[in-house]
Image 1 (cartoon, chains in turn cyan, yellow):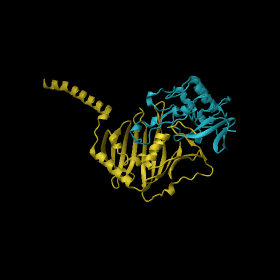
Image 2 (tube, helix red, strand yellow):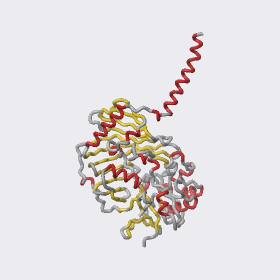
Image 3 (cartoon, each protein chain N blue to C red):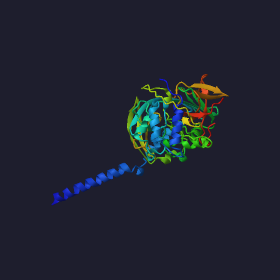
Image 4 (cartoon, rainbow over the protein chains, first blue to last red):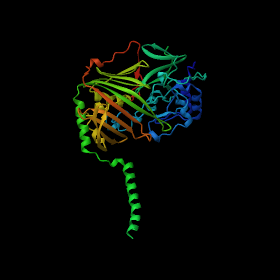
Length: 196
Length: 254
């Protein structure tokens, strides 16, 4: 179950190239991207999901794209995790839970400029595939090495190691360094320059 | 002649009836809010805010909607221990995610035990104020947060567009009266214990999605356990790593 350590970052960067992100944008649907994802480790990669923000108004990921999110091959992407509250703490929040996401806007603001930009792969509907349960052992050799600084993935390969540099926790996967962070209740990993 | 008129009228009557039915089922906004239903919510809310400290365990089911419209259901638990006005620990555990949330001592912490990452941010004021800040500042919504906001946020009842009593029903060994409410983007049902006015069960239906995913929680209250603020404090496990929590308001990663 050997896995290319950089495949996630590659996916992320390909996604960026395929479809530059603008505020409010949603699912990655470029065919090339999906093809790459399908070839990669779909179980582990925990790839981008269609952001459920706009509900049905948002464009849907093409059917084939669901493969990117399949923990077990056949499962389409998640568009909505429902809601666990009736109310949302004030009228200004009189919106669906679905819209309360960790979206491209805030991340993009931060990472834009000087970098490649990124697509926030992470959405509110993180469901901890990072807890590593996989019905099918999958691996594919995608031996690309580029990892766009600032790109974000939902999980990192299991063979990465946690390294603390200057009090900050990183996840090091070969030559690629990720800095984990919470975005909402979800943990996401930002590709960063090697801290040392 | 008379029978012939009946023959004509019957289809018309049926047509009118079916039209009326279609209207009521597709235009719920013009619903009626029964005063008794609101009164029941008021009594329950009043009861909730009288609890100085409590523990409850909820058996929950959540539903994910896939792009195809298909739904997947997952089970889990939500453990809430609270000390009013300003401390709680909430553990939301399911097969697909486990998060522990701590509030108290001027800070809020989110912990993912399986990932072993935690993040803390300053949070002061009441539980309700903390929930508000978590939502607007960090995009974090805690499950069953309504239990804290009912009774403290007077604007909530204004959102209800329809509400009525169904009937008393059995939830486990309790007799709980079933009410149904509708408001923007969500239908919800609540069962309120006839004996102590505490909620027995809550079902939330997201009506913004055509598949209408539901969240259901059966609540098991433990009023004997009254945790202190100290009981609820976060102590980082020795091998846990602290990471940052993205501040949505600032677009600030740090």
